Image (cartoon, rainbow, N blue to C red; front, top):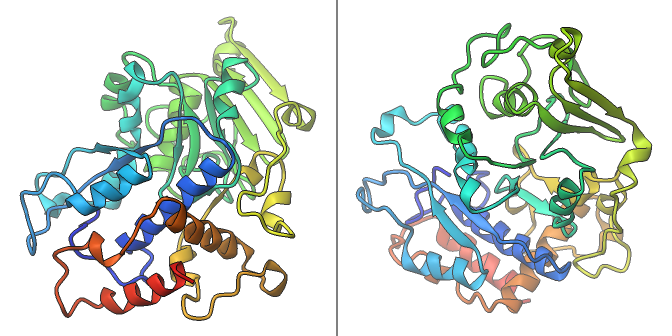
Length: 355
């Protein structure tokens, strides 16, 4: 969300639009390699681009064709009418547009645009249907009780209207309208107030939504799994709510064998993490693979590098380019100025893809 697709930042910029296009090709290849069957929908939000076409409501046709080859459906998100009103919070909260999908999908698994699946993720839907997971599934991440880059929600009629009236952050005591009834646990830290990273934005609202609005969620923290139904406060008041805590044994009931989607002789450590957490990798912050990858001198042997998470990505990207016949990168940017700094990057990347 929030891109100007007519031109692009250099590939070494974490916000490089081309970088995200490359990443989505790698994502599609991995999912196809492991036999995933679920629909793939991209939430795409344009920013007004005064230098090109300030009235544009869709991406350029070559980019739309690119996503068509990858069998990805594009859903355009509402634009901010006043560009000066754009903010990090507005963009982060756009992911909850997923709640509008209640008439299309029973479950929606959200991945940030810089997250790479490493396994077939379809089993998350099956496990939720079977009651092993609650209808909502959230993962603790580093210091955050609810990571905003990978989660499962089950949108229902009326959810969008409830979101629209409840997504204003009040303060660190009341969050989005509910004080914490028990400590919110991240992987490294616990919290008794709404003051973790992202708590006024998506990572706070996600926890509030599944824990205090929907009151039906499975929370995963490495090998520890908690399935909450209702709130502990309601249970203490005799409201008939139930709280169930399931420990590490439960997580192995839904664990599946994670195949090696890029056919490496020795799968890297990414594939040996705790169950569930090894199903994906989130390239958060400044660790985007298109930033870190050495395009001119690539090392594709995981035995010779400690950056296995980038090798997995690069191999998937190269194979995707061949499998889907994605052609010229330059063709994705038909209106690129002759002096655009991205041109040198494109030549280097194209050489890698054809190697």
